[in-house]
Image 1 (tube, rainbow, N blue to C red):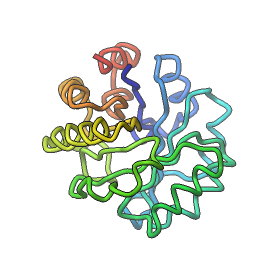
Image 2 (image 1 turned 180 degrees about the vertical axis):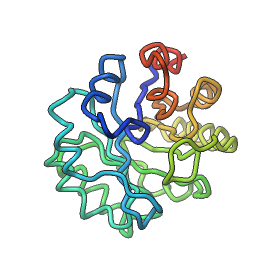
Image 3 (image 1 turned 90 degrees about the horizontal axis):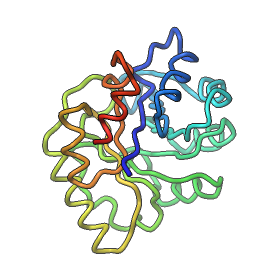
Image 4 (image 1 turned 135 degrees about the vertical axis):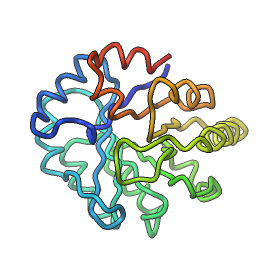
Length: 214
């Protein structure tokens, strides 16, 4: 089954409570929380207090995608705030294996994100620690970007590696996902698709979520 994870980055922040309830009612499987610090990426989004306030509004699993320079400082506060998954960037975590273990010690699922130019070999010694691998199909930091076509081959290669190793972390893809690109990444092996503008900008979010699943 393909999991659809709407990215809160594309929501209307003036009515954030209503937006979360809307995509929950529309059949979303998960909520993708893009936390940016203005250092690892140029933009600032929201932090732990917003996550904490949103938690009582929905039972959807929260995947906190940390686009931050020092992810370790966010682990405990996000765990207390009620997230279910923490996804950190290979490019930002100085001691990645330790960071992943710290996430798991808090009873959470651990994910790793790879920027478009970061090769899969960076995962070579940590596959056993991973519940989720997030392939960025745009460069991180901004919503509404165009999908990078080379991401499809990267997902195919990753899926083949996992099959050969008999491992089954989820493969997520984030960036430029819409009705045209979703079928391509799903066919390549992704089983979680993160979509922002396509869902929050749709007239009928429920129909869009259903269509994105294929």
